[in-house]
Image: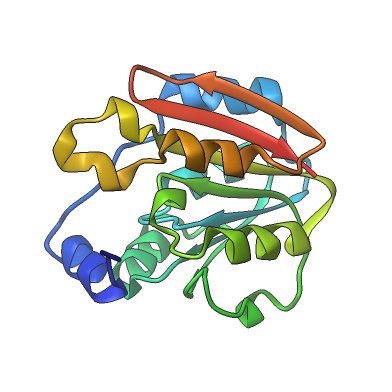
Length: 185
């Protein structure tokens, strides 16, 4: 069953926060994708902006998106520095809010599993990535999480589908539950 924007919004409004960016994630990203040097990054499902903030510290010009208005409001309050902005939008809808911008990095940290139409979403990602751009995904692996959290992760077949059609794939087991991928156009 899809989780709606209203559901996520209520969770953020009630004070719910999600997994902070770990040093291991930071290290993998820095070694694999590298510094921003003014390049553009899009963080889909940014929540309160933790990963978007990390990307900004690496020198990326960052746009964070989430479809929960409370999350976007919290992100804007926590990250006020120039070069980072937040937009409330549904990543599965039209990406008009992005003004047809192309990005060097598109990140989907802990949110890809919730995308309903993954094929259409991946088409949007590829359309908005620069040539040689990187799609970064960090996700629970459904086969490795407790039964109550199966819907928060990707199944083995979904991971196989995610890997298809990229020129380069870098993949790591971040920990016992999470996969970390950098997929290059």
